[in-house]
Amino acid sequence: MKIYNTLTRKKEEFVPLEEGKVKMYVCGPTVYDLMHIGNARPYVVFDTVRRYFEYKGYDVKYIQNFTDVDDKIINKSIKEGISAKEVADRYVEEAKKDAEGLNVKPATKNPRVTEEMPHILEMISTLINNGNAYVVDGTVFYDTQSFKDYGKLSGKKIDELIAGASNRVEVDKSKKSPMDFVLWKPKKDGEPYWTSPWSEGRPGWHIECSVMAKRYLGDTIDIHAGGEDLIFPHHENEIAQSEAANHKPFANYWMHNGFISIDKVKMSKSLGNFFTIRDIAEKYPYEVIRFFILSGHYRSPIDFSKDLMTSAQSSLMRIKNAYKNLVFLKNNCKGTLSENEKELLKKADEYKADFERAMDDDFNTADAISAIFELVRFANSNCTEESSAEFVEAIINEVDLLCDVLGIIPTESKDSSDKISEEEVLSLIEKRTQAKKEKNFALADSIRDELLEKGVILEDTRMGVRWSYK
Ligand code: AMP
Ligand code: ZN
Image 1 (cartoon, rainbow, N blue to C red):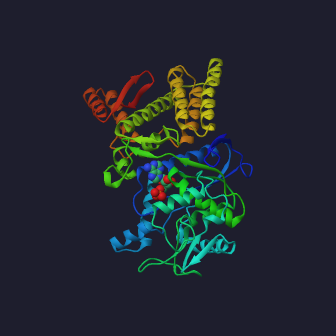
Image 2: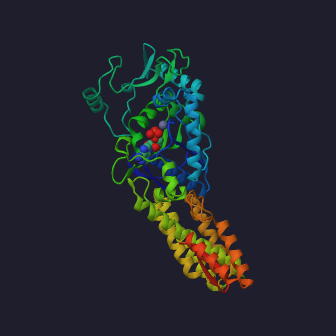
Image 3: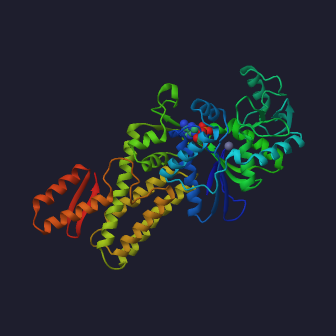
């Protein structure tokens, strides 16, 4: 299994720290608003990475934080006249709703900054004692020049960074170097604060992830992940903190997802092309958002547009309709595998092998989806009314297995759109069958028309009624 490691800029064979186990940390959102469509990408992509490890038999510990102290949260709390905690609690719940809609498995733990304060103070103290941090008037800065590997993740040279920063930003005179960053800062009036040896205040952003990764996964972890915007400075700073505090390598593999743009333009509130996951879920089912995200390689940029979403929706529907047909056949066919079917199952296994090859190659979900389509095409042409129930069931199990790795549910629709539910369809079909038995053809026809209007096509076969969404 190969993973592209941002740290070495190469695809590398994955070797876990501990056999059969994966320790994974993913940077989570700052909880001050509903998550936007860009935030959905790391959620979906790294959940899929986790699912594939689990498929391979690994036991995965998956930690994703919530940043619940931040200027943006404080500003919102002032604007709404409520506490920062109330703002954060609200958006943690909203983020969880979106994650659930996107069929993201719950993390092993979602630590929150406000609940980790003693551990944050402890790591900052260690960094000061080790000579990697210094205090100026209640502020604690990380001394980037004390860490010889600073820049190794982003490939930046510290001298060039310093030169760039000196020209660009207004240099804070209290820092030894313009690249030094804040570990702890004193409160301003009205801000939430915690007591520390240096001042009443709160932590800088970067320290939380170093502390939470250590606390829940250990000094060295297998995989650290997040969006590519986090490579510098956030992840660079996490490495500087963790490695200087623990004297051990921090993460063996660094994974970063590419960005989502909107109609080829960077998403931003001021351009009016800013969409929350919730906005989009009103127009398309969550599962289509997930499918859309996985239809590109996680490191490539992807563009969000109406056309691409519509095309993702119809691709997903192809899988679902084929699946529904398979279930119909399974319920109506009989018998055990024929010799010919045994051979066919070997062929079906090749699609599974293709799927695994794609996922083993740095989680190429685009190719993995193609393998599922091949399998579905194979099922459409080889599962017939003459097939044995055992054969059809074996194919269903294979589709289930592969879809589950991608977090796609081929059966029911977790649908927020106005599409008629499977339950309603089945109940109308039953009504229609009954009407036909009673020779009430007018009613039977009107039910068929009603279903058609709701986007459901019926087909009367020898084995009963088949149906599919248009
Ligand atoms: P934030 O709340 O901005 O810290 O972002 C939370 C996560 O979403 C981070 O891993 C970001 O890298 C990621 N992210 C933010 N915007 C985008 C985007 N447009 N495309 C892909 N990932 C994004
Ligand atoms: Zn982080």
